[in-house]
Image (tube, rainbow, N blue to C red; front, side, top):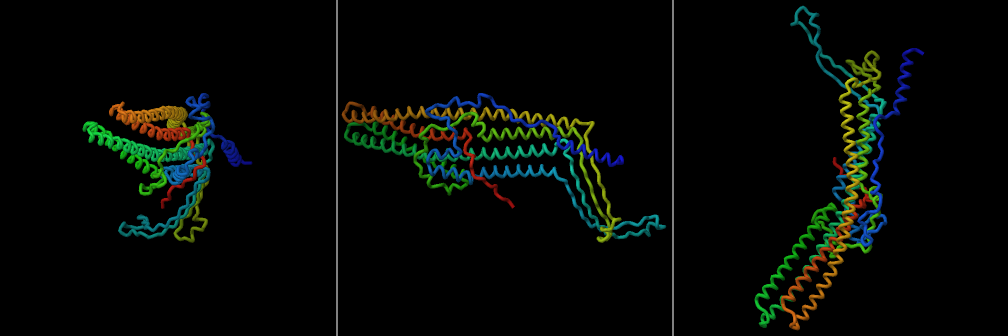
Length: 485
């Protein structure tokens, strides 16, 4: 065997051997704190249970209207369509990175019309020089294939895949938010309707007392001052009703926007709700280990770290030579049929080696940059884990505290009603003053309004717990990005 074929053989063997090499670190999932895997420290038996969180947690309320609204929002929400478009873009980048595994090709064809001056030496005088018109036909084809000796292409694909998985996790995070915000908006619509109803009831109670006060004033038992004081309380009670009605409508419009609709398309069944949804049993919350597996933002941070790690390998490959195999064939003639003649054809084939050695300063700087980005991604992952645990513990703590507050408010409301009943009896018997009656009445109004507000807060706090737990994206429908062009 001659020297030249032997050299080509050894080059091929070396290329095949090096193809399996990919420089840079291989990704390993970062460890989470051991304490993060246990039960939540804020779990109280009266408010939370250790059962796993169901994917469709909103069905625990047994409210058909809420179930329909969440399902519709998960299918039609505009933010989800934006997230779907971002995912499509990330998947396209994966396809673009994979294209590096295949040869790049270029085909050209041209027709040129021009004039070529005849050499001046052929004429005794420049004035007699001639120019001839000529048409030139050219075709060409070239191909190049980069040998992925040090894994630059494969690391690029790895980074693009991890980036697409990050975009998928981001879409799931939007699903979690949409489900929670839809349930919260619905709870607010119902809660403000309940508070408005309580306010109207308070107006009717105070109106009754006002009518009695007027009659007693006319009979000489009370003064105009007593009537004016009762009238002030009545108008203050009436002023509360429009506030709650306005907040109810604002929450209804918020809910409508989450459904991807205009305010004119507000769902009538949601508008008719008068009582916020409640759970009859403790919330299923699971534990920390299940939380970190379920939270899309934790998964997103993990995939971002994986992408950044793969990009270190891309940067490290810049320290090594890049080898491409290329070839081209072209033809040039003055007649199209002449392009088929062997004499009009030119070709070339051979390897191309590029290497920044010995000046590797740029490559080294790019490696430091990639490692710094990966370091930041690792810190971001750790921060996301801590944030997920913090948000869950805070939501559980707030919810448990509101349950205790609601219990106390309920007892206070009952006692206020009893005090008002006794004050009315004693006032009619002449053993209690009008001021005692007025004070008891004001206490009942305040207690009713506080309890109705607590009902709404309990529903909102429950939804906040479910949102912190990261449920709602499993089994959600696939949302397609809007088509353009």
